[in-house]
Image (cartoon, rainbow over the protein chains, first blue to last red):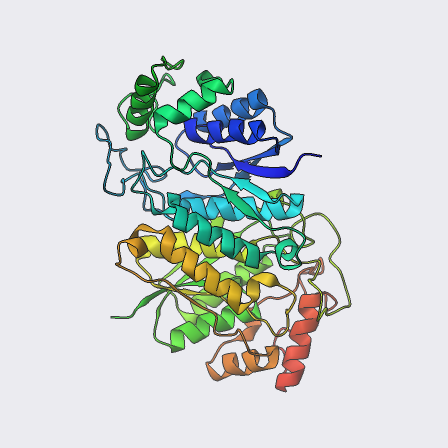
Length: 223
Length: 223
């Protein structure tokens, strides 16, 4: 029998590739997405398409309103910053405690499913500024998780947080996904789509995606 | 200037007393409640009344759908267990990863507010079965939290998780709250109210509350 996993899936390049990797590693896939007041539903639609394409046992979408907390260009009614890929500093699109909140929901669902494996597409290379993408953070979350739940405290399960993209460049991630047969035309990266539903081409996420495809020597099927 | 705090507030005896304690300790109070698909809105109303009564700077209610995860009598469409206060085992009303999810949202808000102090009414005495109420869990969460956010990683803030009720009996908690002038008629404990909006008197939470007031030698103003 396959070992069960919960995979955080936003529908972007990283989480979609993570899902494909978890499949290739032989895990049962349970994909978890959030409806957290994104400006655009396109991202959630992409997550649904990727989940079907890769083939998951279940795809759960949880409504959790991160907008209420405030403090980020991704969820607040402020302008998305354009034209700069920030290497050193923490970007303005940083969402407070986002990975912690998402991993906590994943942990709750993993306890219900009795799934020892939680996958997240965290990456330190292109987004070095996010504190909650670093290995020491992920390790601390794993330790906390194993003290937090009935199934782990009773010894039935030992939770493991998997972040297979952690040390990969965007180009390496894209090459890996293509090797695994992932169709990137189903994924979505843009923070600020045009009224016609096309990527803006100018936000950090579009720029990082474009750079990744270019360096991978592959044409982005989203154009 | 007062140091800022975020206080998790459900409107029950424990979290309401925790709010009163945080006030007595001189913190600026920012109360955080969740609309997570409770069967009854009475609990959230109680939280609002307690927040006004104690006097908070802000009371934020976040919609976060824990029902979607399943696995608990408190949020699923199963029957609430009656007539047994479970001392040793983990109760059926345990919600998977609930404290972890709530503390994660509190952490996100605390980062936005730059509030170093997070209060939770966790208690190991009456509910010894909940793994996410134990000191070792809370310590692990605190360590993870300080690796998770921009303000802590940049050294601006060191987050502290406060659980002032941790080692107190329910009777001690109630006596403390009364000393601090807390009006327990505004609080709500019952998991399964009557159609007329009265406490059922038979669920674990009603039984623990009744035992607490009895041992404190005080009449419960909710009757």
